[in-house]
Image 1 (cartoon, rainbow, N blue to C red):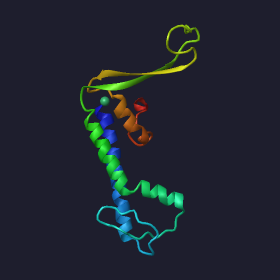
Image 2 (cartoon, helix red, strand yellow; image 1 turned 135 degrees about the vertical axis):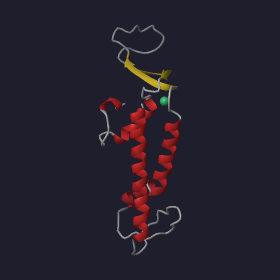
Image 3 (cartoon, protein in one colour; image 1 turned 90 degrees about the vertical axis):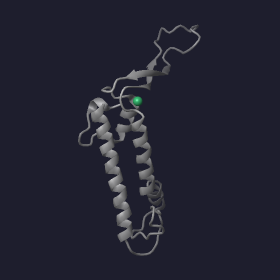
Image 4 (cartoon, helix red, strand yellow; image 1 turned 45 degrees about the horizontal axis):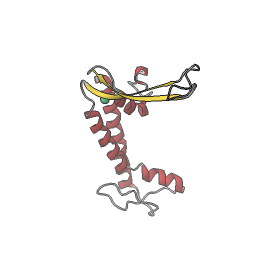
Length: 148
Ligand SMILES: [Zn+2]
């Protein structure tokens, strides 16, 4: 679990560095104002490149400010999952073909999902931390055993 926590924290740190680099690049950019992402302390910075509206919207939604807020929220979620703790696990399956029609729930061939609180020891990656790691799958240090 410590390795997974360290891996996710390192990825979040990298996200922050990239977000801060965007801030810095916008400070250096000159040219006419096309859109403003307004990073903290640098309102109404010009951007030097013409981009289409969907791309501009995407960039605005994933501005440095947004990335920093996402990283902070994820760091706080990680803090809630350190050491031995109880965490929610989702179990899924399919009702078997011979599932009785009069069982009162479910239907043969239908998917089911059940959430249950389970205890995870400090060395067991819980589902929440594994899920937080998924966007970083395949990066240096990633382990397939962390795939959720
Ligand atoms: Zn957890």
